[in-house]
Length: 315
Image (cartoon, rainbow, N blue to C red; front, side):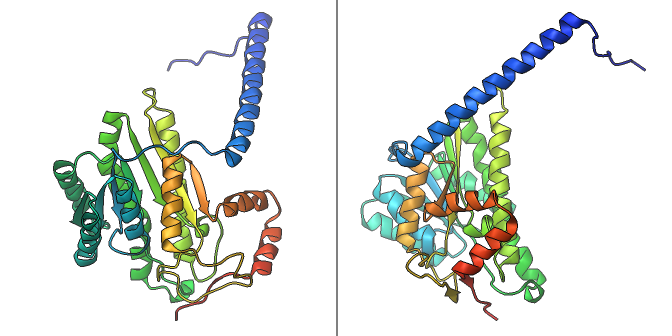
């Protein structure tokens, strides 16, 4: 059995290694200061929004709510829209609304929980519309009641739509993005992907998962020697008034009011066009969460009690 080389005890080698480590630490500190200052500047002076008129954007859940608003607003920017939804009727209504305004759109009916359907649909998209350059995983459901009242079917369906569907679309579309060395993947997490809320245990689990998926995938590609120019954006909306959030409540309605779907869509598109890695709606919630995560958990809980915001059980 081959023996491993033992560390050298040569003083010269040890001194050389120590100098290398010291140099790497200094480089890390310099980079850290630069990145921190750059990040603080970009909080005030955002990167310019790029033109998306030459892009093809695929939006899941495009037949209603925020997905429909995203489709309409992207089309208004000259982007070719690929609308995907399990509801053929409402999805075609989105496509018709875009075409009525002179936009370019394609509609595809697809159950996002069915991996084979997703793969087949993405193949048709490539043949009929072209290579997707922007993917927006928007489709989601949100059963709102206590964990012990959540049925097995509800929990599985929540994870199938809110988490697993992300894998199927990314696996289907990322290869062509890598070949082109161009692409942007946007996912809808939630404030419930940063903070736990009562009556939303499975939903919170899915939205925390989405955050981890994006962070890990970004790291995976960052380690790729080819250094592919694929961008990732994770969005954390507060409650959006699409009908998904039933029975909301808040102590400070002027501070934490329901977000209008068209405002949410505009914020998502702006974050994508500017290449932001993360963005919350409203913007300040991301920074507020980062601050409280540096404090004892109990402080955040007390602040949550002060705000007194969330959803009541729908049962």
